[in-house]
Amino acid sequence: MKNILTKIGGLIALAGIFSAFGQYAGDRAFRTLSNRSFKKGELLEYRLHIGMLTAGEATMSILPDIERRNGRPCYRIDVYGKTTGLADFLYSVKDNWGTYYDTASLVPHQFYRNIQEGRYRKYEVVDFDHQNEKAKVTTLDKHTFKPKDTKMYDIPSNIQDLVSGYYYIRTLDFSKTQPNDTLQVQAFFDKELFDMKIRFVRREVLKTKLGKIKTLVFAPVMPENSIFEGEDAILLWMSDDANKIPLKVRAKMFLVGSVDIDITDAKNIKSKLAVVEE
Image 1 (cartoon, rainbow, N blue to C red):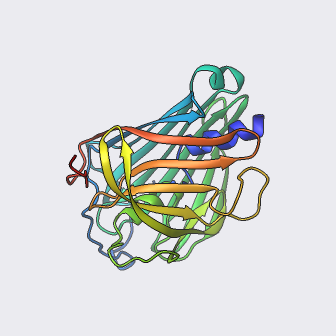
Image 2: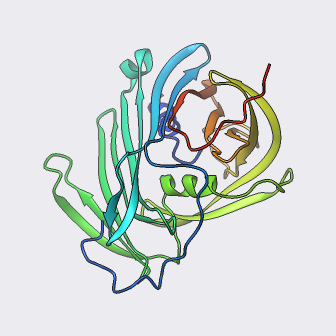
Image 3: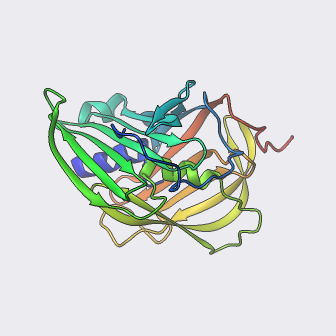
């Protein structure tokens, strides 16, 4: 049960479905990309259900103020997830994942995660130096929150973290995407490089609390595991419009069955949702 609820905690944080102290000498390492999909102040709210049971809540927010890292303007994006009710009694999860995300180049300058799952604690900060293609991972003491371990890692150009990687995907053009097309984004997480791969499944209209919305349906490409059941064990519904906001995640899990994360509200989004009029 503990392992299952830990995975649910990760789903609540929507992680899969995230500061350098010096200044760069120049901007040679930075691309410039357009973003029509999100803006500062955006707030997305979700609830997690196991069958008929409400088991958790989550938010994805872009803070209203632009901040600076490495001398560059950044969105600060926070993902919060927590268990509620019986799930919280059985195994409490309170997680916060976040990124400082370059507004122009759409690469992360700093990633952090504050994990509280049962008695387990992990506090970590990753500083990205895109000029020198390095990532500094600092683990914080769980009692004092002071740095206790720091290591450097090589990274490729334009690497993403788990939070920024999803927001990068939101900026892509899917107008010509066909079923079974696969998207790949390289990310750095837990001191390792890995490829985030998602397969496009179909287009469909999804009924949500925000109305009936045109969506793009994706399936993350999963390795064999003992938690999720079947080839398309996890499905992600994104709005089929300029926003591309996540509307729903469904995971088929051994032992507990279907786990659903559904949007309950979307505030200060950049464009009109693709709502199908009744």
